[in-house]
Image 1: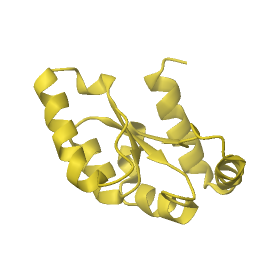
Image 2: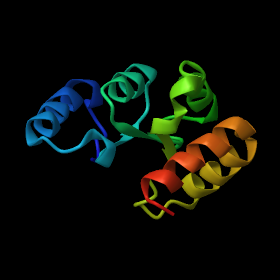
Image 3: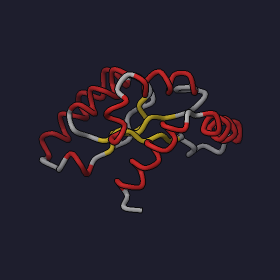
Image 4: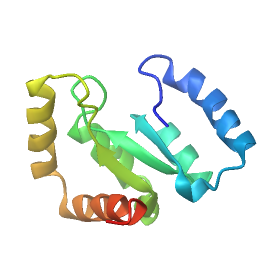
Length: 120
């Protein structure tokens, strides 16, 4: 589920309410493009997977490291990604550069989360 670019904190609860009402298995849902620790860990604690976006416009590597460090025991529900729908080469370069610097525990763990979720 793609969260909105603007007003994420105020709109995401409405999204979650709809998902909750649907009855879908939480293990089958990714609440995507999150960029703040409160949202990430609230959603993880509800039993969903999360996609945390690395992007110059959303969250840089330091922001990501801060988010991940808060609950290292729950990283099996967290994936890292980039919102590269727009053809911005700078976003792509920043994403690649960031993942090269990402602490190996986060790179391995978050990558494994995606592999497990998508059964790759």
